[in-house]
Amino acid sequence: MSQHVPIHSWSGSYYINSEKRWVSGTLSLTRTTLRFTSEQNQESLASLRLSRIMEIKMESSSFIFSTLTVLEQENIKHWFGSLKPCRAAVYHVLEHFWRERLLSPTEPHGAEAPLSKGQELIGLISGAQRRLEDTGKVLHHQGEQFDNMAQGLDKIESDLNVADKLLSELECPTWWPFGKLPWKSHQEAKSEAAAKSSYNKAADKGQKVITIIPAIISRGGSTGDMKPGSLTVLVSSLEFRDSSGQLLHHYEKEEVDDIRVHNPYEISVRQRFIGRPDICIQVLSAKMMEALSILEMQYKKKIEFTHDYAAFQVTPATTPGSPEGAGNIWRAGHGQDTDVPVEVPAGELTQLQLQVLPPTVTEAEAQELKQMLQQLKSLALEAETELERQDEALDELSSSTDHATMNINRHTRRMRKLM
Image (cartoon, rainbow, N blue to C red; front, side):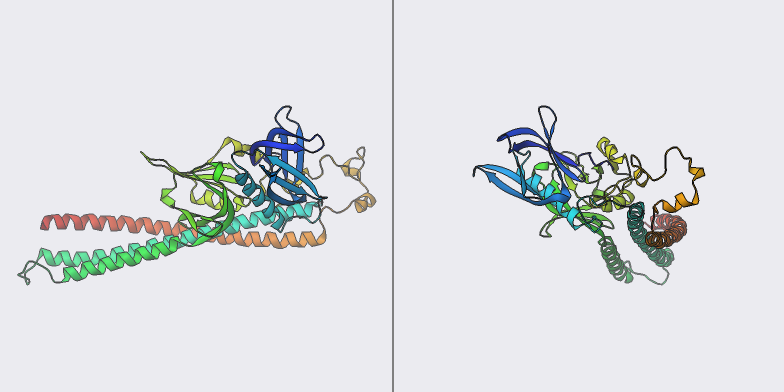
């Protein structure tokens, strides 16, 4: 992923301390830096690495004008004012990405700590393992839904057998001279209780949480009211909550009409209406990739990737907390000097020269990579087994549904003859 593509940008002004004046321009947040570019000549006036930021505060300039200050290492303070749409929205977004980057367990120690190819490989495989684990959770919940559907079809088949017996009695009522049947009220009460019980079980199944990520949430698609909160992805719904845990909005799976992915950290969820405004929630999160892999599986026909998303796909995507340069392991040696002279072909290296070259991957890293690959293989085999089981369950559900449909149609024709 390109480190220079902005995740979000705001128009505003920057105070140049050496010249004692404010300059209009654009404040941009990228995966690793916070940059301010002047409006007049597109010159970069400030470029701050997120790892060097010590504090982000909302202050006042000259006790009158509202500003946003960023304190860098070595007590260097940067002032930003006239931020649009508002200072609070910009503060919430910057504070979220800065905090998540500091709390990331994969953040290297030191300001510019270089990573070996072994560490980069470990980071890539770790990300793939997390995606596969999320996929396994979705497959597990999907298998539970198939099992519930099979149990429901078995219940329908049992009720159809009872209906067949009752219809047979109605077709030949030689022993009952009265009009109303005594078992009718009892059967209706029993079927109503069974339907209510099955609905409650389905509701409980749909409330299982798959993942929860911290996020900045805005209702109505406006960037002016962005506030901290969380996104909860459940088996059959989406929930948006504020920082205190209060529910802001709840989407059932069938209520979601489209999910637009603006970049790997920003999405918008929309429910469309005719004759009244749509319900749109905009979500910005440093850990969006953890939820996006699940959303792609659950809402694959409703997800739309915008043109802005393509700019982040120059190299494989990583989260803001991922190690620097972990996006592409093959570019690690590009533009760097090596111990092999250019004029010596690779096939003519002597054994002594090969011994002098530093190892690309250490023994400990190779051992860790081996264990992680074994875990990936185990997860992949489990996913394959679950998929095969679900394919068989789908075949059984299809045949059971056809059989139940035929019985219902046959019973309907018999009931019409009795009317």
